[in-house]
Image 1 (cartoon, helix red, strand yellow):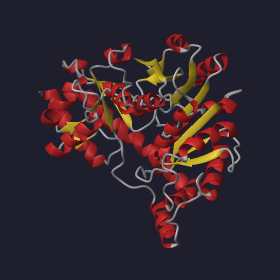
Image 2 (image 1 turned 180 degrees about the vertical axis):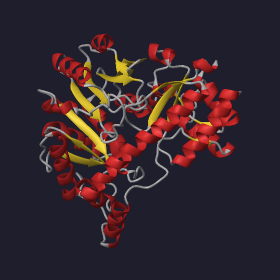
Image 3 (image 1 turned 90 degrees about the vertical axis):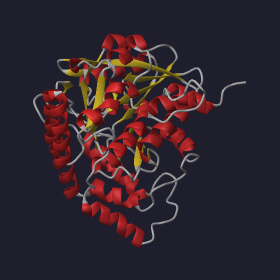
Image 4 (image 1 turned 135 degrees about the horizontal axis):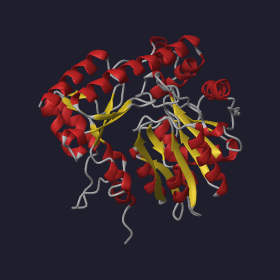
Length: 408
């Protein structure tokens, strides 16, 4: 008998125990550990301060005005129009809001619906490694094969191994799932890396799916990077689906309002699947996000958020380095990766379980974002991901705890 698909998902994400019973994710384990010990939780990446009050008021006003029933399946017109305006204003990408924009339950549903719509048994879906954990799960749900190309730590941060990327493409490569700015490494892929992905996708007639939820959270500093959507590269708009969301940009991660933009045939395929997942979602949040995408004061708030995150990144990186970690300074996102090998730890999972007692801090092992036994998994076995999207006083408390680790 063929195993149930949930077993494929559990196996792909490393959550199937030897007894055949699925285990909790390491994220759930670490959050429970933080709650039990009172440690500072730098494992889960969500802000501890809400986004702009004006956007929250827009949602409250929408509730009061009666936006509490099912919205249109593709999303309310105002939000689809605002997303199309955003893509045109920021990137010169012009999409028809009626046929080439789809609103989803966050980027996670957008990714799931896209992979389920466009890949299946016999297909390969190529991602970078390490990778956001939901990628492996939805690829398994689709019955496709998950292949990867490595990001490698070096003096310039984590960079894409272009030779390994070329070798990872095969005649079965159907989708290339690209995440930039990248979770968990904080890398912002440069134009050379993106051009290599685009060239290989064209050569192999593969579609590209981009996860750009951190598009506006590129951080300040020497050699500041710039986010370049793959769809803006020559010849790529017609074969690329771009995914983003309001959660990270506006610090309302619980609202779960995302979107997909791209050519009509591909968006229609995704919509066909999406309507049988959540159907619709977030009725009062959709007009609020439409307001946020159009309001100049909110746009200024987002710019200030990126500046603030840059400062908080530097605070945490300095604390980690002082504690003895080797740190790769991220160019974007909410996260920094730190290698515990200089501290004598070869196993990031073991360190994360010890950290609450040693330093009063919780992180997440980077092996939660790798294929067990892969070259990347072995290379990053001693690495830990920490988030800096917390208030200054929380990060200062974490840094003080990490200092105890160094003294120990």
